Length: 173
Image 1: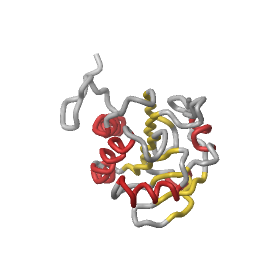
Image 2: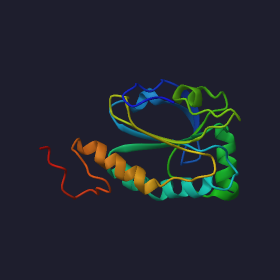
Image 3: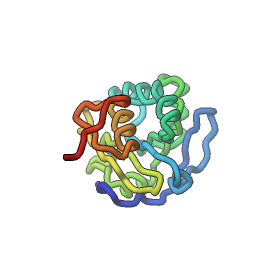
Image 4: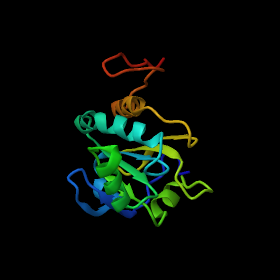
């Protein structure tokens, strides 16, 4: 898995966009912005929609925080569109298709089974990984915790366990 401080791979993937279009997206086009990229294993599954809906519900908060939110799985952008239209419902961020597995391999999240593990990356405006979190396939993650981590990283300060925006920072001795 890609490590803290490493640059992200410049991969181009087809994406299903919130307005219904499918078009290529390059991770390089987000240089200069904070980026939150999260992977789910497969479309049309059980835990994945709970996470995708949670991230979609907080998409405005990520946007207000100056971060671009992207989701990805090894399914195609066309499969993402079918899932949105036939069960998942509206999603407010681009969903990257990774049928070639180039994106998953570039981030080191491809499981032996051929799907991506549940992984979340927070990437700074210089294109370097600042946070990595990964779970086994059966355990969902917290979109709110990802947002909290983004705010902590953006602060550039020392933040305590359970720190929330607006709270005091840890003073260096």
